[in-house]
Image 1 (cartoon, one colour):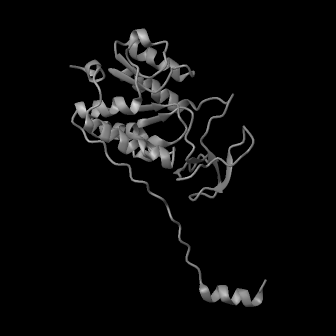
Image 2 (cartoon, rainbow, N blue to C red):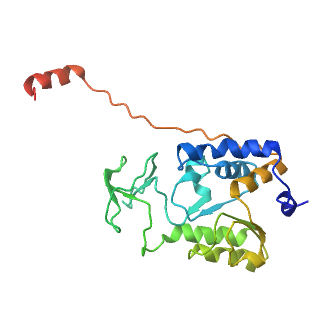
Image 3 (spheres, rainbow, N blue to C red):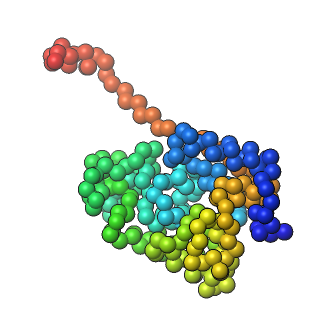
Length: 239
């Protein structure tokens, strides 16, 4: 019994079907949520998972439908645009990459806030830029409260996210790591040398939970125009 026994056997047919259904997305678009992303959504819905801390900028956790208030994206999200007007502060989740600047430390996207009209900025933290404090502070807060920290597909070498497992171990929590590479925490954790999607498929079967299907949604903006005015304008300015 326990997680260690889940990963010592081969995948059953139903587990293979679960994994293969989600792996097919890789052939179409790598920026779509995987089985693991959708499994985490289900685990949160069932009360097992309380919080996600991510060092990825791909935005797949939000795209999967995971609650935004339960995620710390330490290095930002490539699909977010932020209004820095203190009186507004709106955040917009797009279905496209928001970064437009070719200069490393420029973040203005060229688009305006739909609420206040001020400039919007991408959410990415680039090389040699300081991480935003709020996501990291939230990550530390939830890590200190965790009775189990599950590390998925990380070698735990990128600072400061690499420090977070220390908080779990220090307060007596348990640590489980799913990664093909070695990590500095292997001797303090249940270490599973496997592919994350396969391990999560086994876990969901063990818990008798169905992984929800990801449904791709696109936003279509339709603008209504006055045809009579357009025709009149063409007469005045035919070119």
